Structures are given as structure tokens and as C-alpha cells.
Length: 172
Image 1 (cartoon, rainbow, N blue to C red):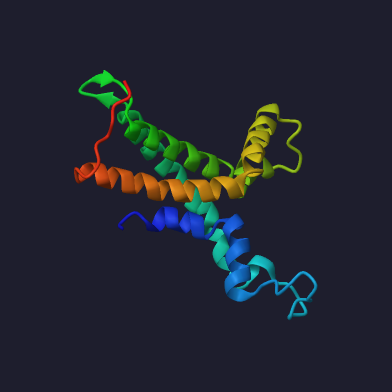
Image 2 (cartoon, rainbow, N blue to C red):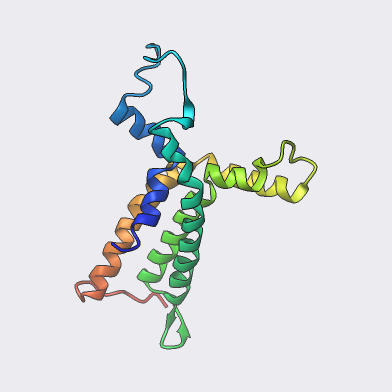
């Protein structure tokens, strides 16, 4: 519970999720065929959209969490000093992979690696990074939901194994 605010903040301020919960909670926009109830669109300069501007800072925290989770996944492949694999190893590996695809496909990261400049085609490395993030961004919704479900399953799996309810089967 002490660390949940960081990944939770990243998800709550995500541009993809925003489209879903703004429609559900604030009925904004009210409908495709219904005009806006206000005369002037204020964008991210007014409440509640102004709160979304912290998303890029939560992205930086999420990237740190990915490093920690990648280390956990790596450690999950070592048993008594020997390399091996168990079901738990694979669960943790899929967890960090899905979370990485979700975070590395983020709109804020796309802006960070390529959108700062008006024309990125003159910088080949920046263009490749932007294309890579854009490729992941095309499936951002899929990665968002799959990673959310898999995080819950991973936490449950680790909890059950740590309590001795389940046994982590070794593959090799």
C-alpha cells in the first residue's frame, strides 16, 4: 500500500484511461451527436483535465518501477545459485513484459523521445525511438488491460506461493 500511489497515479492519469472514465463519470463529451454544453473548450488548462499534466511525472516513476520488476523477474530465474525456470519465473517475466509494453508505449514517452522537436526525421536515432514507441502505442489499450489483469494475477500468485497454499513448480 505504501508504493501503490505511484503506479496507480500513472494509470489514473493515463491518456487512454482518461477517455474511458471522463465519459463514464463526467459524461464528457456527452455524445458524438450532442454538442458541448460550454461555448469554449478549455482543454488541459481547467479542472479536471489540468490534473492530467502530472502523467509525465508518474511516467518517470513507472520507469523506475520497471527496473525493480525486471530485477525481480531476473532473480526469479535463480534457484540456490543455479539458473532455472519455474512457473513463478514465467509469471514475473510476463508481468514485467506487459507492464513494459504498456509504459513504453505511453503518449508521454512518445513526446519525450521524439515530440520535443518539430521535425524528427533529421535525427535518425530519435526517429527510430519514436517509431518504436509509436508501434507499442498502437496497442496501448490492449497492453493497458492485459498488464492490469496480469499484475493482479502476479500479486495473487506470489502471495499464494509465499503462504504455502500453492507450490511454484520448477520447469527446469
